[in-house]
Length: 225
Length: 196
Image (cartoon, rainbow over all chains, first blue to last red; front, side, top):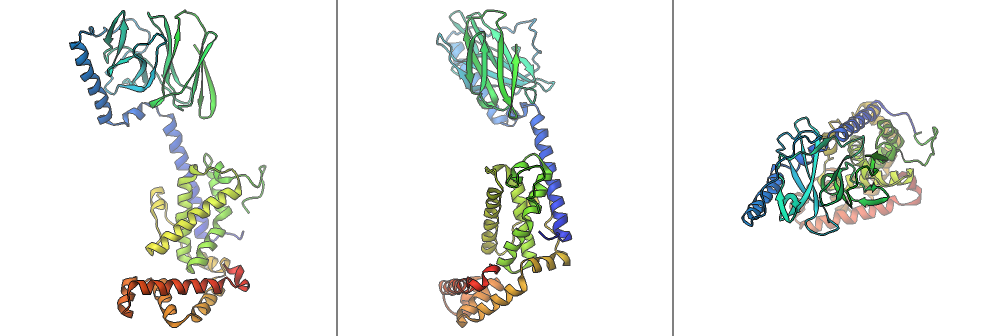
């Protein structure tokens, strides 16, 4: 190829600079907490989800479905701070081995900018818990587990429940399948909207090793809990 | 230049590497800019238009490079020239060069310095090609030659020409189309192959 004239030579340099800007911007976007993703869903979507929950909750109360659960105190997860943008992610619904309402993730961001997740069950659009034979709505002020899902790996939380279930749940930024192992049992779950996932295991034996494998930017990240 | 190995295969896709490496996009540009400019110059016969089309095509390539699914130099070349052909078709339809991708990138098109225009004339062999096209135009029947020159060279609207010639737009379109087809056949003469 012959030597380029000045205009084309300079244009090549400007394209290279534009490429560098675009790559930097993309990197910054990747490093941002994913909370922006559901903020980007916009108020109408969040409002619609909340409205559906409130509406269905009202029906449930008329049905005598139980009082809302009071948030537990002394939980060691980060404290919830006015989760105005909390959203139940119905597409994360995972069945329970004994049947009943599916398990789902509710996600929000706290005022520190961290991503937070809660796990509960979804019944007629209401996020809550089954206590005995009753379904009780879980209020938005219930505590969640907060961290930043990003380059270091997914946000992962574990909950052992009174129904003798071990729930491993969280947010996987890459949305590639997550493999969850509890003791010698494994499940491969595909993250749903916003990267939310739940793996449900029978039994709630404390001390069992829990390993979560996921892909972040093409590399495998292993979390041992 | 461009595809010489520097610790990598000559067939490696620079475009794919440019997903995360801005310098690779610079290499990609330098590997293809001459061929692309010649491609446009020989089809528009206008160095300035060729530079503008080259600029917008590379801006689109930069913007859309993550849609490229190939792995080789051959594939990236095919991909780039597919964008180029679309740009050229759009130019013929609209009568002007799009600059949307350049605007989105915040990038001005290549400057048409005297040196750049002379370079395009030289690498695309435009003087010879122009005289060849002129000669082909001269061999067309008068009504077709007039329609081709008025439409393609002067960019006059079909409706305007139809009014002037007191024929329908369809007739003008047919004359332009027949004229261009005949010229294409003349230019595909084996003796002229290196110009097209």
